[in-house]
Amino acid sequence: MSAAVMFHPPKHQIQRFVEGELSAGMSVALSAHMEFCADCRRTAGAAEAELVAQWNAKEALQSPADLTGILDAITQQPQERANTPSTPVSRKLVVDDQVISLPRVLAQIASAGLNWKTVSNGIRSAKVDLDTDTTCEFIHMQPGSKAPQHSHRGNEVMLVLDGKFSDEMGEYGASDFVIRDPAHRHQPRTETGCICFSVLDSPLVFTEGWLRLWNPIGLALFQLTRWRRRKLI
Amino acid sequence: MNNLSLSLDRFSMGFMVLPESRAAHTPKSDALVTRETDSDEDLLIAVGNRQDRIAFNTLFARFSNRIFAMGMKLTRNEQLAHDLVQEALLMVWQKAPLYDLDRGNAQGWIFTIARNRCFDMLRKARRQPACVSADDIWPLEGESGELSTSGETGFQSVELSQVEQYYGQLPEAQFAVIEQIYVFDRTHEEAAELLKIPLGTLKSRLRLGMEKLRTLVGVEQ
Ligand SMILES: [Zn+2]
Image 1 (cartoon, rainbow over the protein chains, first blue to last red):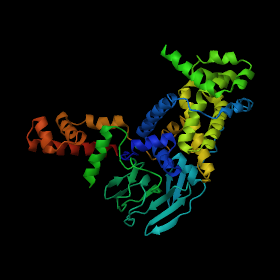
Image 2 (cartoon, helix red, strand yellow):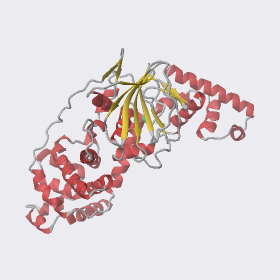
Image 3 (cartoon, protein in one colour):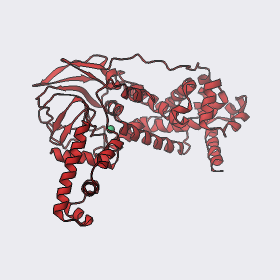
Image 4 (tube, rainbow over the protein chains, first blue to last red):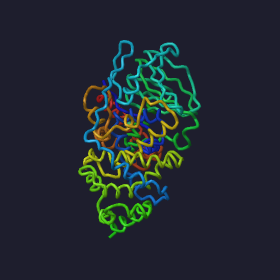
């Protein structure tokens, strides 16, 4: 069973992702979403083309003159004739009796091993240390479980990996990229069980503009999203 | 004409970076001039196919400032930006044989290399864990496509064309109402007035359209 991807990172965030300006944790969440979202991949492609165009139009900057000293050193280096194949990592994540398939970047991260800890009744989390700007964790919610109601100092992203969860704003399924800003108090809950990847960023990392949810994939899907959300409230 | 002046600009910009003595040492410094009319792609392919140093010098002159600017923006540190120019252009040299036109334009390819190098450099400088690298986050073209069609995964995305299909399957009158309300964000009253239909008719069309839409989405799921 597969569900439609309904919730996407805002365009502004995709642009910063392409630019390399987001934290590692947030970049991982976007990358994982995009592996399964052709629309966001297209948005990222367009953003990249725009950035490259701006880059090309850049005025000459006074750069240190001794940079040219490295020309010879570089051209004496051997060149790569073939892509060095990266060691394949297993895409499977086993949680209890469930086996799910992870996006590549998350499989890479999980390959180091996950250490699950009980957070509350029916909810476990496995923290992964990606950077100092964010708190990243895999979250497993058992069927019928409810997270304690909470708000946060920073933005929270929940990327749904398997199953569904819902909160006061709507219901989210596989690959949905759900953003909750600090103003929201919310209480995720699930009837059927859910596995997510969650990123909580420090309030210092992201500034204004980021909070504005702007769905990148065009009016049609954006409105369909809104429609669905309204229906669910 | 426009193209020519653009590449001349690039030339003078690149040339500024070269100290006089260096330019004099370079065996075929006049060849550098002729290469300025070559496209970035031709130069990169020449570097990849036959270790063409003059072509690489030209790319270096064209891109060092841009990469430096990217480094300054992302790291706000001149030393790191300086290192980035060196590391990114080393990687351009090393990976040039892997470049072909299927990978898009040369600027995009070099941009990706520089952005990824910068990301990893900055993480290293800030002593962040090495469990994830830029190449995991921004996989090479083709890799993600291959995976999403492998069928191994339970994930599926709805393409925009599918969404358009949903709307396409709605009766025109219902679609018009949905469009007014949800796309143009009009109130029921405004929409009824614009569509020249009674408010009651609007509401029932909206309800029917929504039900139909829900069925369509539901069928897909
Ligand atoms: Zn998306």
